[in-house]
Image (cartoon, rainbow, N blue to C red; front, side, top):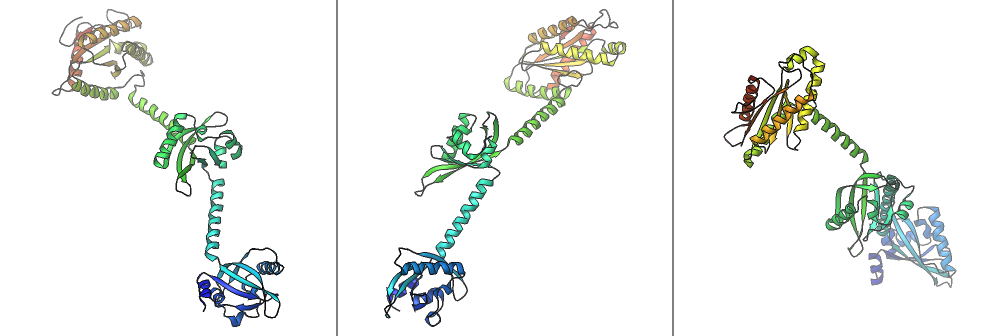
Amino acid sequence: MPAHLLLQAKAGIASIGLEPDGTVSQWEASAEALFGYDASRMIGREVTSLVPSPEEGDTLKGFFKACLRGACVSDVSTACVTRQGDMCFCRWYAVPALRESGETGLAVMVKDVTAQTLAVNELNRARSQARSLFSSSPIGIFQADIKGRILVVNPELSWMLGYESPAQLTESLQNVSCLFSDPRQAESFLFQLYEGEQLNRFRCQLRRREGGLTWALCYGQVTRNAKERVNGFYGFCINISMTVRVEQELKRVNEELRRASIMDATTGIANRGHFDECIVTEWNRHVREQSDLSLILCDIDHFKRYNDTYGHQAGDHCLARVAEALVSCARRPGDLVARYGGEEFVVILPSTDLNGARHLAETMRCCIEGLAVTNERADLVTHVTLSLGVAAMVPHGGTREAELVHMADEALYRAKELGRNCCVVWGEAEG
């Protein structure tokens, strides 16, 4: 085989000669290599027998006729079927050629473009799928250039942000920064994206057309040009507004449950369980800080008689009024007033020395007395009063919080012995 024909065969190029009517007059070895037919089977046969459909056969005939007329037709592409039954794709080139008979035939070259055609078809399918995904995706998608200018958005993003169409959104918002409700979020999104070349789970609020806000989980991926330089990015936005609402409602319910677990239902103040937790926490903190921790235990005088006289409903109301008054006296952020049990209350006073605790206890006693809640069964007085025991110490590693509680309890017991309606500091006997 001549060298030029061998090169043609290796390059997937076949040489064919055609009569004016399109029948094969010359069939080179390169054509046999491409189609699998030898010259004896193809000479005198219409070359259109190689194409699988009449429509493509007509296309090929029209191309040959145009070439014979001298029309400027560059090439035509068709599918072809080899002798083995395999489908291939070919590009046909033809020029008029004078035959030995004096007639003008055609010199034809056929190039096998199967690989390229399949690659293009696959690329077109991928593009079609990408367009379909872009248009029908349930998440918002946008593309922007390196400066953040919005190039294209999909229908879901425009719907998510309250726009009638993608075109309306891109006309209204030229830059990605306009999507975010907070400029600082926009800056953070772009910085993190370009810094890491991709960004996952960026939680933010996007601005809707009417001015409302939509919670979104945003992702980003940079794009590159042919020189592998970053030239922009894709953004993906998932609407999580419903999720956020559920989270907020769950947080609210959990907070209510937490408050219910630490709150006394009758008085609305902290319950015994919460006191037990707080006293341990404060004790450990004061051990580290080596500062004074004070405690006040108080008891409503003759409360059982009050309950027996006025009933449990009135008793509950009395407890609530006393609790409210005690809370109004202990106004510092760290102070805690809790119901200790029955008609007893306890007050934790962080970073408070004995004098400060004594002063507050007397203030509380006077406050309750000033309520003038009638109690006709009380001794000596005709209204509700309070007995209080006060204790204070600087906690250290060799002691426990129970010791401070015991000291305050002993002081309270002494206050009752002294006739009630008084404050007693542990270790003292003052009325």
